Image (cartoon, rainbow, N blue to C red):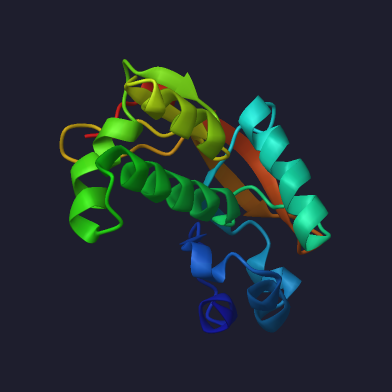
Length: 174
């Protein structure tokens, strides 16, 4: 980035999430990084599931979670895997694999926590887990869409700021 800047290249940079850090901005410099954009998965922070997760995260870790940093996605991945184990009655890879789609797919009872999911499964209900990162509906191929995409941009102060949050619920996973 520094070399391109020094050579006078003036194209719009879009970086991957591994460069969406303060370290990158500080190393390259504010003049170099101003205007660089990044697209990252994110959450819709007004959702009750994000709000609940944020409170739990802050109580446990001592700081607020940051949308787009895979904290909520990791949390949800563990819950979905655990719900798949509950649904299969096994703690094996095969049990998880066979039931991931069954615990997070449209049409089931919406559950927003592990406890709600276990209770619904014990009642014999199909479930649709909606987690901290949003509604995680798997399709028949095992793909899941992210609930939102954040368009970030390095501002004049060298800080990553959210330009826009795109609610991607209208775009089904393919």
